[in-house]
Length: 264
Image 1 (cartoon, rainbow, N blue to C red):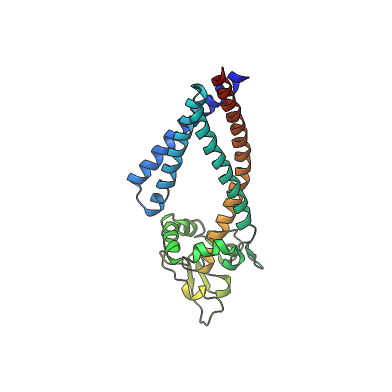
Image 2: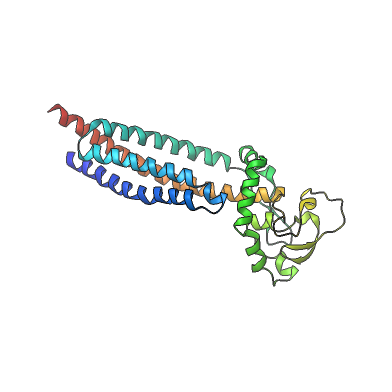
């Protein structure tokens, strides 16, 4: 049993070390070769994750296989912090995603979204002008609306209204249903005379780089995407936490074995 826990921990950390190499390499590659701010936004977190995994796995591997108790203690401390952070993130993710849902429209296959339906914390993130300018540039670069326009270019207005759109397509690529604009194409609408009850109607423009990217509906569509993604991540994170706790338990056994061996 003594040898088993140390060997098992060593094997787990060996594979973690191997995993850290492509993660770190990907972060460094992004930092040097990223063509846009959207891609560069990911390089630092990926590099930090790669370095963290590499050093923690080395500490666990050497501590378990070479019976170095101080390294194994550092490994267990880092694992404890990781479990604590994972637990806090899971609670936080469920807390900020408990609000928000698209509004069902009569005779429409899609929903429309309102920023005010989501948590205050998420609202503040998209209300920040600097944050939104960066997000908007990423949305434009990702061709969300150009792909949407090509896909539904040949449909009639009746067919379009019956189409099921995702949150970003509904919020960013077409005007709000409140505007009552005349449909020409998925991203081409003729404005009707105002005044409008929805401020997004004034913001809409048929230009591919404008559309409704500055609309509140577009921000709400992004929030709905984030909400759904975070919920999935939080659910997966529960399984990951269970795995971390098991590994931490094995590490505790290995640490206790090292201490017993040092007493002889």
